[in-house]
Image (cartoon, rainbow, N blue to C red; front, side, top):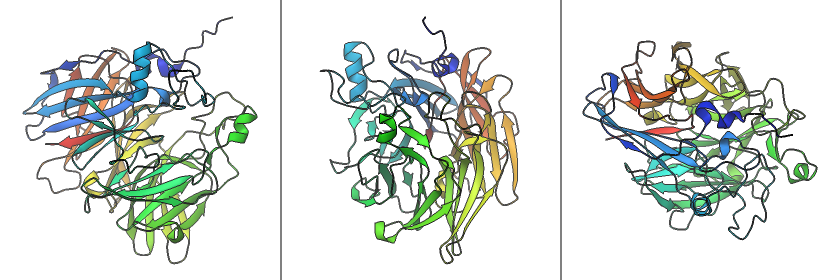
Amino acid sequence: MVSTTVNLYLDRNFAPVHQEITADTLEVIGQLPLDLAGIFLRNGPNPQWQPIGQYHWFDGDGMLHAVEISNGKATYRNRYVKTAGWKREHTVGKAIWTGILEPPQLEINDITDITFKNTANTALVWHAGQLLALWEGGAPHAIKVPELETIGEYTFNGKLASAFTAHPKVDPVTGEMIFFGYSTFEPPYLHYGIVSPAGELLWTVPIEIPTPVMMHDFAISENYTIFMDLPMTFSAERMKRGEPMMMFESDRPSRFGILPRHGENSQIRWFESPPCFIFHTLNAYEQGDEVVLIACRMNSTNVLVSGDQFRYPDADIPCLHRWRFNLSTGAVHEERLDDVPGEFPRINENLGGRKTQYGYVAKQALGPVPLFEGVIKYDFHSGKSQTHKYGQGRYGGEVVFAPRPGGTAEDDGWLVTFVHDEGTGTSELLLLDAQQVTDEPVARVLIPQRVPYGFHGTWLGY
């Protein structure tokens, strides 16, 4: 009997769009600020062909969606990130690779010898005059702006010798780009590196951790780098037993490693706390003897587990938490900042690694797939928050802060995200006043085709 079960990550607005378009002079409801000039870009999964095997949201080919704003007008374009894997599947006219829920394809066929396809589908970073599309299992891909043409793999003149995180941190003061890469089976399981403000990869050092883990994000403060050795592990032995290759191990503690930014493995200090998983950090900073980390914490995660046998009932409910790591006493203090589920935390990136008053988190609606029904603005000074809801049947994604040119206040600017209306099947770019988040949107830019739900974005001001 043929299964009629619908893959939720291929349905409704998770389903891919296949047409690459450019559309000028988009319709705007409200008014785009005349002093707002730049381009909002967002990455996300968009399978080129019908997937084979079990498809997960993380598997799709990267597609960039961009809205360029200037003089109160807006232009939209979307383009695939044309990786080596994308090109090979495009040539044969079908999918070659399965996804992360399937066993590794050690010998696929005579078309390719690549075990995992680098989809470049997760995030974006602008550094040293170059836009990079990112996927944590391999090298970045250079992208031409604003055309969104793929230039090719970016290995820092051949110096990149490890995977490259989807969440590098660019220090707004020094201009350095700090990154790491993790390995799934072969030690060393973690590499750490720094790229100069001019774009030169200065050095990469191994960091010792006992077991390969999924380390999706990390954080930096002014002087330190914070790694997260969390109990979402890789295991070849599990895979041989027919169990998940990746699984959350609730009997292992969470470990946070704090390293002087330009240090090496011998200088790292590890702090333990109860088991948890963190996909995304909001920020980190230093306060007296403490390094403070703010991130969206969940008790456990089922995100990469298929079937019910190894699933946790309280998984995948992220809430904002704060950790304080005392470098003098070794003490760890963890506290929940909110009971409302939220993910994709962002700040004004001009203050990355320094203490901020505000943070912005996508408000998550509980359900079988991650949908985000609004944005929460947190005021860490007052301990209060404000929420903007998109409306019935309307869901957005990560919000990005676009600073107002010449603005001096931390929240003087706009919050930008794509929103999809499930009722009408239409998508738009939403612009909120970051200082008045509960107000009606400043502008809604109507997009002439559907923009599927995706991952991370960035704002490049002109």
